[in-house]
Image 1 (cartoon, rainbow, N blue to C red):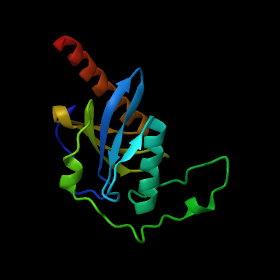
Image 2: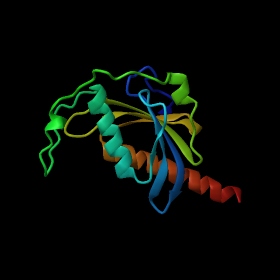
Image 3: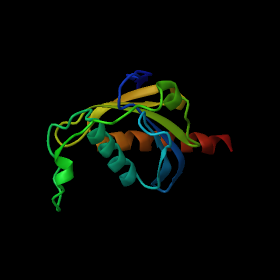
Length: 155
C-alpha cells in the first residue's frame, strides 16, 4: 500500500465506515455526497448494490458495458443524473469514521463489468488501487484482519 492518495473532489467519493466485522460478516455505514443520511448495510452485497445504483443514478463513472440480469429491467437502460443534488460536502464525508475501520473509496472506471479505482484506509493513511470490486473487498478484508491482529496484541 502507498501513502494516502485519493481524489477527494470526485463526485462519487464514498466513505465506508465498518462498525462490526465478525467471521466474514461486515456491518457498517456508507456516506456519499447525495444522501443526508448514511446507507446502513448488514452485508457486503447490500453495499455493492447500493454503490452500483449510486453510480448509475449520477452517471459517473459511466459503465462501459450493460450489466446482465435474469429478469429484464427497462429502468436500468437509462443513466439519469437529472435532479441529483449534492447535499454533503467533502469535509462531511471525510469526517465520518467506523468503530472498526474507515475506508474512502473513489471508483474511477466501470470497465469489463467491474470497478477500478482507489481506496484509502483512513486509520493508517494508506491507499491502494483496485482493479475489480472483488479486489476492493479483499483490500477492505485484509485491513480488517490487520486491525484484528493488532487488537489481539493490545490485550
